[in-house]
Length: 301
Image (cartoon, rainbow, N blue to C red; front, side, top):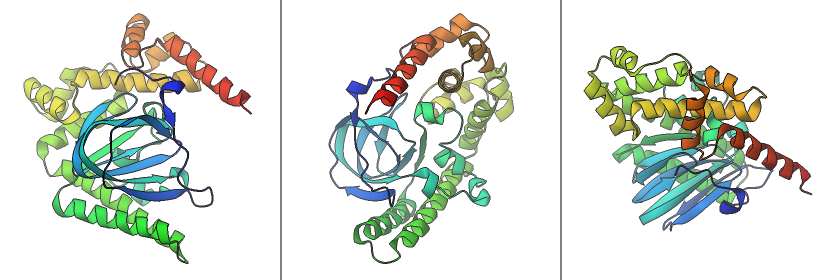
């Protein structure tokens, strides 16, 4: 899905939890197709069975049993072409339930799964993803069931138990996400290239530089990157630059030309064309639309 939907095209779903305890865990044994909708919170989804096409603001993915993904809120997403889809959905306030421990945040895999405070994450809706199999999936589902039961029963001390189980789930997913890449050298090579693009997106970065960095042939790199990321490497780099540009358009008063150069474009007209492919609007229109939405929210009673 490349078009940014307007407010009237997205269903706004109220929070399932109360302000006193911003966390809930629900089980959906049969999940139907669902149009674009938005939750004002973060979500962690575990696909227990079946398949579907999951779409978000900038990306569309086919999900199947064992897929686990995390989304920052508020951002819209939806499901289509569902086939016997069953999932567990955890909604939470990341400010309270994502551990701030430096040791945990330094874990390989944490940033990939829970780095929703990274630059551009708020704009693109952050999509941390991994795929689990066998005992890994069984363990994650078991932790989720403990969370669901504690949230439902609310026995004395349940808040402490939920916090403990959710921390265990965060650690497990950070570990498993890292292991999934680390144990496959070619996956590790692509992960290294992705990390490099995420960090050096503003530089004069060429695909030939990445090929040398990871030690693959150009053909191998293109093929493996597309297999793992679902888009070509050049398209991914453009997407990263556009995501950062969108953040600057929303959060600063810098000129569009200045932003174009800051995120790695050498030509402002090319930047406008590249930006327009994703949100389906020019950078100027994107900034104006965002300002209008903020004004409308502030004027609402």
